[in-house]
Length: 236
Image 1 (cartoon, rainbow, N blue to C red):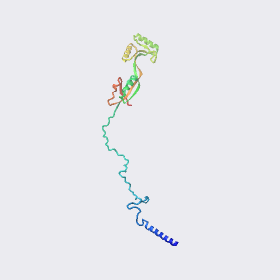
Image 2: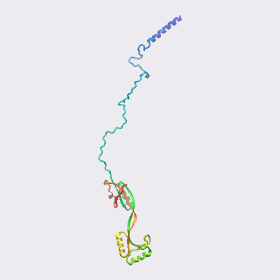
Image 3: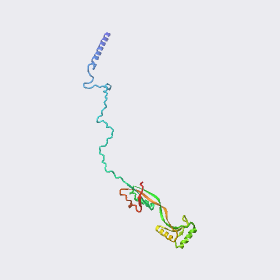
Image 4: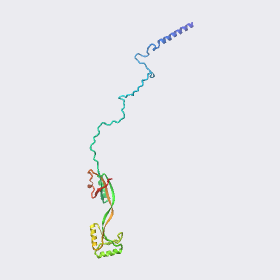
């Protein structure tokens, strides 16, 4: 009895499994597990690879990058006019000034007139007078003898030099005007004495102001500095 019942159960189980295998597989009967008109989901790994393309990608107008090149301005270049007039300059030396104070005043007066200035001092030889004399012969006794002869000839206003390089010389006068010196020399010479005349000089400083002024006609140094001369000098 038991074996008969087990046999019947096995047959029923086989029938149920066969029916499920036959009727429960959708793919076998062309049925889909999704609703109609709804695409089925697929994994990324199941998607076919896109075909390789050898053509370079074409950038769209919105994403294209302009090349880094210089584009010249399209505005017209200014038309060149007449070339500017080149300024020329004159270089002069003003002076001589008597004192450093005069030089400083002149420099202050020309500050707005000159493009450049420089001060300088030079040594020059200046005549201090004219000397009329008689050589004394080299000794004191000869000088005294010559002095007595001058007195006898009514030639006055003399003295014997006792010191320096001209010792024992008979001085007949020192004159500022060379004409007066010549007149005195001729007077003593007419009395029979060999009077001589020589120029006396000394070294004195001179003060100069070198200026560079433009030739535009605006620099008028003569109205600002008076009492001195000028001459051309090298530019600096």
